[in-house]
Length: 365
Image (cartoon, rainbow, N blue to C red; front, side, top):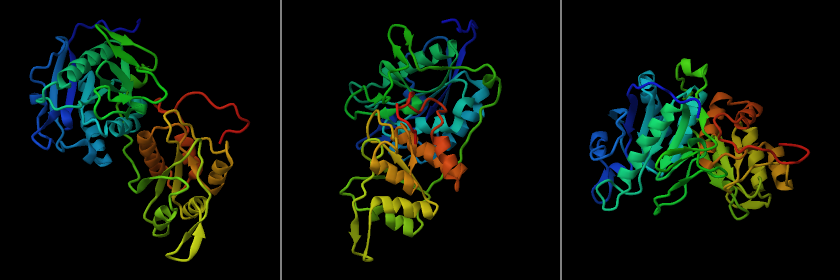
């Protein structure tokens, strides 16, 4: 590769420990180990110089709020100019959410590699994957710095995955992560093998400061919708103005059922399509997401999707659930009353979060 750095200086890596299984102790497991304890016995490339830090809210990743992810991003931003790469030790259960958050917080202003790593077992457990995970992550950090790779990535055993589409697929398998519709962007062999999908430094953006877009709408919830799901589970929130946005996991390319249900509590009859219309009228934005790994929401493809679109639904395109949650919250916060701007923002591929290509149809919705 032609863009390799030639500097003999030490590569400076900032390591932020946020908790998770890899640093847990006891029965039941709870995050307790510090970054320095986790690094004991880990093989680190000689060219690296590490700065170890502990996030002040170390905990099980299932318990992390987006506001705490924003604090992590700010902690990285504070030292950004002083380091060449960043490693975040994190629990695996919500690593996809944190990867999506970093992508949306930093966007293209992140012009250095940021690697998230976790483990399926605690460091002290026999057969633990912690040493391999951390050692490989530091090898990747060194290689990515040398070749000017930028962006958010996950290191999982022998693969490196794009953080903008990261999903956990297994609880009892060390190969825990993947990116739906995408192959690994790098592989960890005796040497680090680079593949398609990596993002490299932009010389103009690289000389500018890291910026954080930290605004998110808090009042957003996700519902899994089928013909057997009573629509009042959302209508109650709409009528009580409890939400500003809702994500509906649909069928196919955007199929929301239009079967009518009788709401015995108030003697009315309505469908999920009616709920979308009521929500839209009340200024509550409804996003539609596909449940499938390679799913693309095209609301004009089928009649039910067209009905949802007519009622006010917004396509969340091919976003993964974690990225859809982050990007939709950010879109609503930026454009709280402008449905068209929200759709435009969702449909713009910022850090690689959308699958490329388009359907061969007369009209794209």
